[in-house]
Length: 486
Image 1: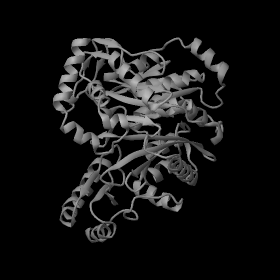
Image 2: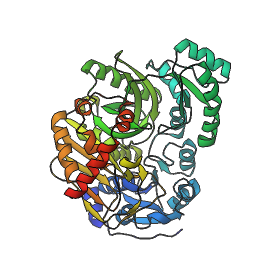
Image 3: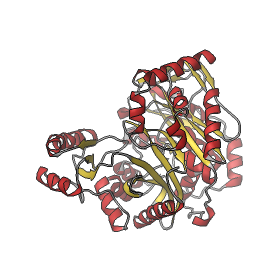
Image 4: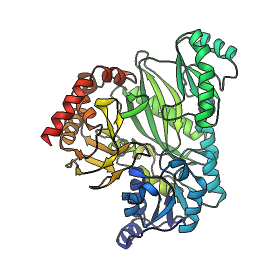
């Protein structure tokens, strides 16, 4: 390993120091890459902390490496030998004299063993304790914890299913179709659906083997499958003693259980349902003594007007900017302050929801050709601007998008006083956006904004899959039109 580059951050440190005096964290190692690494570096600098980036071979010229006070090389381009290598990250922290490690999202952010290693090394893990990650990261344990906190859960098994006979009995009790879910899964992976007993017999052993191969844990559990569910999540912030919520996000526009577009607040909730949902989330977070930012995910059954807890993400979320937009709270900065030993600065009455925000994930994929990956050099870059428009990205002209990692290039976040105004502003911003050299999902978002059901907020978790099956020609035409206009 070798330190690669340093930038003069004295000006940023002077501004940050005037705003906040770090108590324990002088230097934070950002154990991630891409736009979230850039986001954490900015927040650290605002608090007067040094920020050190870790980089693989593919990321030596990344924006994070350029913005950080120092960049430390941790391995080859493949994530298993760099960003997923705890030993390399801990060695980098020791080399740069870091006091804390911020894991961002993905990679090792919800790895309880890694968090425990950080704690054992005498460093601060910017997130919840390893024990909380282990409890809430295991979906079966999280479900049991939710039930103890009187938080509604989807009808299903009480913990891991140990045999096929047990699975059959549970499925008969809760009713088909059922979801078979990996206890250690995440990001929409490790899920199968059985519509009858014969399919359950076939799918259960396959799901167990897949869970073992993908997550090192073959445990699975069952839940009732809600065909037209909405995916709604509640943002919480805690200091290990007190917990507040920052309202909810709607995340139902998904492809293969991967989120495409998110908004806050949800267009489907009444004030009474919102209050009950958020109260249940804070109740569960308090039950485990939650510290840092976290997200509790729910399925909302529109037809019944009922919500069910499904899992907790013990980290910052990709879609956190929409919550920041409607509340005015900088979540990343707050997680650093809490990790630095500060008590929670916000009471629930301090957090007021205002307006509406929508986030579009701009990925290096071609929606017109089954979302084919599109790595390559950024030849042109035009970001939209104006009131209420935010871009979170690691792109710059000439940057080469590597083929080794998640395809997320940027997040376009738009805020305005109402949902209709936000939709209009988003359409304008998407029209201004131009990324040349690679194919992106921006064309998908432009097409979705023209859809009547999306504009009205009438969608569910299976909506986008059906929409895509009927819209291939529309996507291709939209892409061609935008390229001609650009």
